[in-house]
Image (cartoon, rainbow, N blue to C red):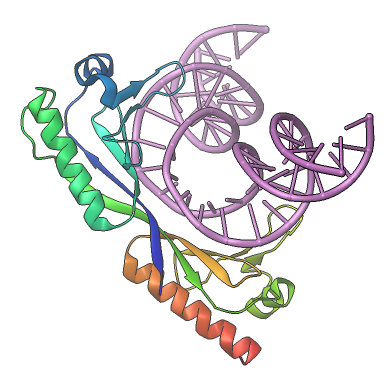
Length: 181
DNA sequence: TGTAACCGCACTTATATACAACGCGTGT
DNA sequence: ACACGCGTTGTATATAAGTGCGGTTACA
């Protein structure tokens, strides 16, 4: 239905950090350049999700493919900080999923100009010279959908996988009723 | 040297986060 | 006229989609 390709989550360690010292302690796992960006980048491996850690102790995990993977990375991250003496205790104050990015497929080609009119011009943006996809902001979902001529659809801004799937299902039925396919 | 094929990149969307630099408004 | 505070913007990250552009490479 909807294939999740990216999950963005965030949390807090609830302690202030000296990022310079953290980078020193963790070595290759951390990439920190305060002149370029205030956050320190932490990554376990080449294609692993990225954790951006801030002075305030707050952090963001990007690039997970599921909620489960995000949770696992968080656990490993906390354990690693604890093992290096950066974190006194390995339980953080809060952690939550902020954004799901997924891909759906209508499995047929779409006339985007006609779709923009069908869905309503006030809810859509379609400027093919600027971007090949149609931007659809449904009234009853917080998610935003990017629809392409191939029928492939990107769903983003969802706070849960259920929200993403529901938004896509709703869009697909609207699409089918518009074009009677 | 010309043309063709291919590659990488920016475009757009959402979202958390922080810090610098900017504009603008108000008060002194 | 100037200082200060607040709001906004750009910086950076991941990720998919399809299009167009520039640059590089290969072959005739």
